[in-house]
Length: 176
Length: 125
Image (tube, rainbow over all chains, first blue to last red; front, side):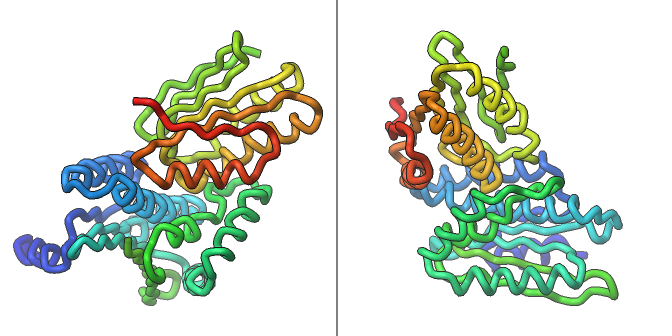
C-alpha cells in the first residue's frame, strides 16, 4: 500500500483525522483531545467545537459499546474506523464498524426513524428514554443517535454492506 | 455515610461532598467509558444520604456530558425529586459556560424535569 496515495485520498476528502483499528477507551479519548485542540486552534466557535466533539464521542463510544455488548472477538471484526473531515467550514464525522446482519438492519431502521422525526418528537423521545429503567448489562441508554441528530444539520447518513455470512459493515455519517 | 471523593480525569468530573453545607459538587466533563459504572456509587450514596439528611444541594458545573452521562445525571435528579416529595430539601445549582450555548440549553432541559429549586448560573472565570 502506498502511504502517499492513502494520504492524498484523505486530503482530497478533507479528512483531518482518522483512526483505523480496534478502539479502546484511551484511543477514543486521546483522538478526541487532539481533535479539540486542533479545532480550537482553528478559531471556530466553542459551541461548534463541542458539537463536533460530542458527535465524535457518541459515534466512537457507540462502536466500542456495540462490540463489547455483542462480545465480538475476531480481530478483523474488531477493527473499526472513524474519520473527521472538514470542507469549507462544514464538519463531517463518520464511523464504520462490523455488525451482525440482523443488527445492521435494525440500525438502518433506527437511523431512518430518527431522520423522520421533528425536533419536537426527538426531544420528547429523548425525555422518555431518560425516564426509562435500563436493562442490566446495557452500556448505553439508546440516546446516542438522538444526541447526534440534535447536534447535526440535515439527516444522518448510513450504509450497510454485507461482508460475509455473519457480518456486514455499517457506516454512520453526521454533518455539523 | 462518608462520601469518597472522586478525583477528575479528562473523561470524568471530580465529585465531592461538603457535609458542612450538605452540598454535592460535580465539576468537569463527563464521558466515561462506562457511565453507569462510574455513577453507580454516587447514586447509591445519594439514595442513602437522602434518607438521613434534611436537605441536599447539588452544585454541578459540567459543560459537556455524553448521552449515557446525561442519563445518569437524570437518575441523580430523579432520586432528588423523589426525596423532595418526602420533604427533603433538594436543590440544584447548575453552572453553565457563557461561551457555550449548549451548556445553557442542557441546564434548561434538566430544569424542566424537576419541581424542586433549580438555579441556573454562569460559571465565573
